[in-house]
Amino acid sequence: MPLPYLTPEQKAEALKKAQMMRSKRTELRKALKQGEITLEEILDRKDDEIVTKMRVIYLLESLPKVGKITAQKIMDDIGISRSRRVQGLGVRQKEALLARLASREENKRRA
Picture 1 (tube, rainbow, N blue to C red):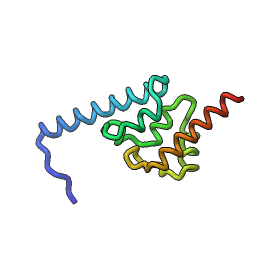
Picture 2 (cartoon, helix red, strand yellow):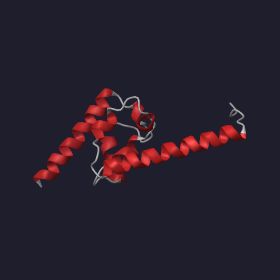
Picture 3 (tube, rainbow, N blue to C red):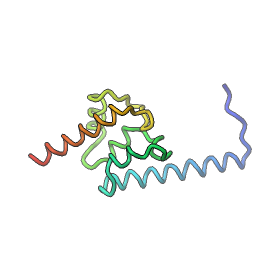
Picture 4 (cartoon, rainbow, N blue to C red):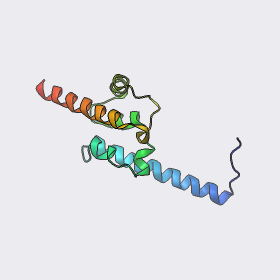
């Protein structure tokens, strides 16, 4: 199926919207990294397009002390595809993700 024809004005508007979404996602990831917001609060935003369109892997990588390998391992253990977006997570997957990260924090405190 071919892409629809867009006028130059429509293209400019679409590019502007895409840039705005990317910068808002960056701000959200930075707030998560700095501990200003929790993963649970982000996952509760069911109607926020910024959150729902974000890939789960990028969200996990934004957590403090979670890198690419750890994020992928967490997702593999729970059974979440690498390409999954937040809006595609099921209730059980969200619960498993939060439980896994909570137990990870508990283990760090003990060590």
